[in-house]
Image (cartoon, rainbow, N blue to C red; front, side, top):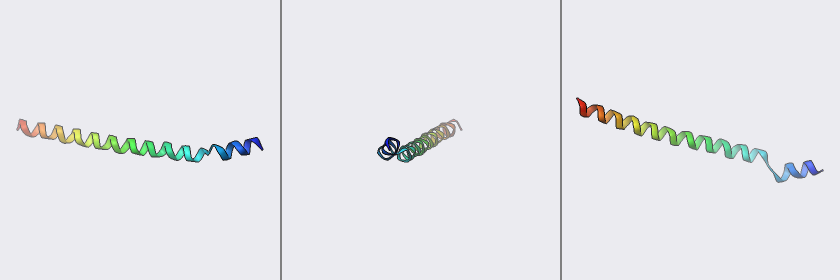
Length: 49
C-alpha cells in the first residue's frame, strides 16, 4: 500500500517527460547557437575575398 501511494504521489513519467523536454530545448538552443556561429564565420570568410 505504501509503495502504491509513493507511486501515485511521485509520478516518474512526468519527470521523464520534463527531462526529455529539457533535452529537446537544449538541443534546439544549441542548434541556433551553432547556426549563428556558422553564419558569423561565413560572413568573416566573405570579408576575406
